[in-house]
Length: 286
Image 1 (cartoon, rainbow, N blue to C red):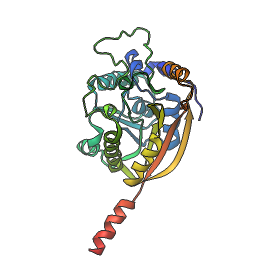
Image 2 (cartoon, one colour):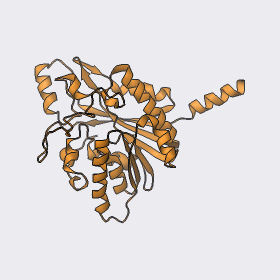
Image 3 (cartoon, helix red, strand yellow):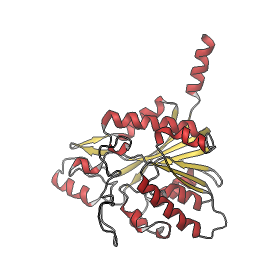
Image 4 (cartoon, rainbow, N blue to C red):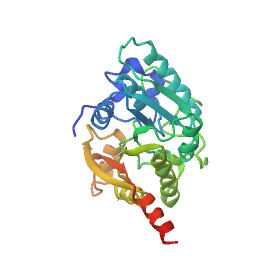
């Protein structure tokens, strides 16, 4: 897939506050729009359990879907509510619902059960967090656009390329590394499975990254996790990054021998009955 860059929410500025631009990990909105249209239809329910700027539920509602976003960080939830107000001001005839809430994606089924939304989602569409960029010194990744937008001053309340101001907060999955990170994401994906409809889809946008001059294959680790908990890999797409970040360009000038990461991976999983069937067979044998 090839799309132009949407730095600064280009072409969608009217839907997002200026402060939203400073979020450390924004999905390309042309890509997001394409995925919503490709994997859902009008009136479907779409969930982003790690919503960030809440661009997924907002664009979903704009396209006559019902978008629900969950986010752990309070500062991002407040940002999302302001973005939703901008959406609400648009007088569009066929506009779906947009819901914004705070919560931990590792308890997704409980959160959705409280709202009467358990098992109704046709699609989970999200871009999982990974690796706090400030913890890897110069090894920043293209996913993070740390350029300061016009009119935004860095301060105590700014993001500075971080998911969380507290680097030690283990609730924030973006602060975790290695096995801890994979274990946390396995919990999240298992919760996503619980809230989906019988044949629901989970669409993940992620990208391999570099650590200690070696590529970490997050795509392969994610496929392994999801298949182990009852998802089937239905489709795999690649999105060519429109440009390399300033930090990544400098990094490769310094270490030209390190492999470049030029794509984001889109992994499309379908909820499988395999685990349920295996449990039923086990009970029958007993």
